[in-house]
Image 1 (tube, rainbow, N blue to C red):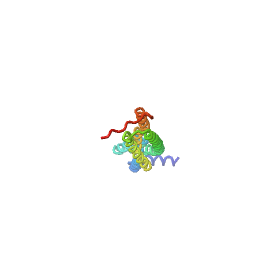
Image 2: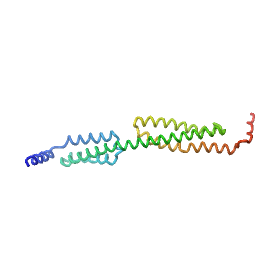
Image 3: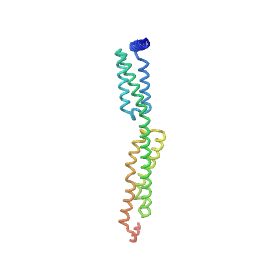
Length: 198
C-alpha cells in the first residue's frame, strides 16, 4: 500500500516538472525515424509521431506538463512503430526493384534477339539506328539502376526503373516491325535493284 502511494506521489511530482528529457528523447526518436526513411516507407506513423511531438512542445510551452509528457511518449511510440515498419517496406521496395530490373533485362534480351533477326533479314543498320540508340541508352540506365540499388538508393531507382520499363517494353516489337516492313518491300527471291551510280 505504501509503495503504491509512493509511486503515485512520484508520478504527481514528475508531472509538476517539465518533461524536457522525455521530449528530447521523443525528438531523437522522430529524427531517427526520418533518417531510416520512415517519412517515405511508413508515412502515416511518421506523421503521427511528428504531430504528437509538436503537441508535446506546445503543451510544454503552455506548462501542461502532464499533457506534454503524454504527447512526448506518444511521439516516441509512433516513431518506434514507424522505424519497425520501415524495414519490411524497404525490403518490399527492394524486391520490387529487383523484379523490375529482371523484367527490363528480359525485354532488352528480346530486343537484341529481334534485332539479330532484322539484320539477318537484311534490314539496313541505318534503319535500325534509332532503335539501337534507344536500346543502348536503356542498357546504360539499367547499369546505373543496378549500381544505385546496391547503394540502397531506392528513391533514385524506383522512378528510373518505371521509366526504363516504358522505354524498353516496345523495343522487341519495334525491331520486329522494322523486319516485317523490310521483308514486305524486299521479298526473298526478287532481285534487288542495283544502286544508282552517282
